[in-house]
Length: 183
Image 1 (cartoon, rainbow, N blue to C red):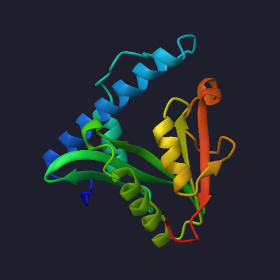
Image 2: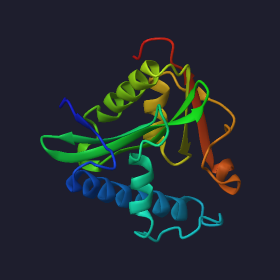
Image 3: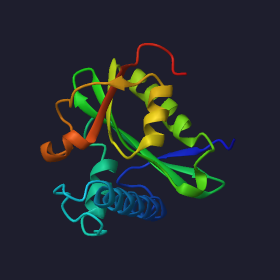
Image 4: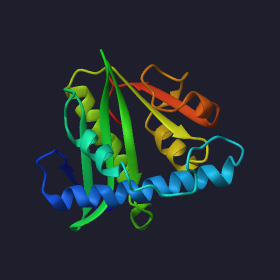
């Protein structure tokens, strides 16, 4: 299995890092909106099935800005190629949230998701968090298996989630303590 290089993204990162993250964000959103339209055609999925590039730069900028202490966003590279992205966002107090853990299809099966989780959990532990949350759509079955394998269990929608109330019934919310070592 390849060992990914985690490049911490920041506002002052080279253009290539931001361009890679924009490409990954666009792929991720196209996949999510497409799956939402396919799986939940009656839901109000705002622009489902249609990729929007407007705002992608703003999203990446916000994720990379590091405005909140205890937050981080990474580009994952394998052999110099953008393979995925992942981030950690402070929800306040002792709780953090995993954001945008996405691995490109060509790199799936290489344990990059597990590497990303171990990295984010180590960062969270370093910054003193004791709980970590995430949200995942019901159609993200491979992600569910990954999170369960790393000790995540179901919980109610948590304060600070960005999942709109209208979609929360189609989402899975998970959490775990991070006081114990990562698997």
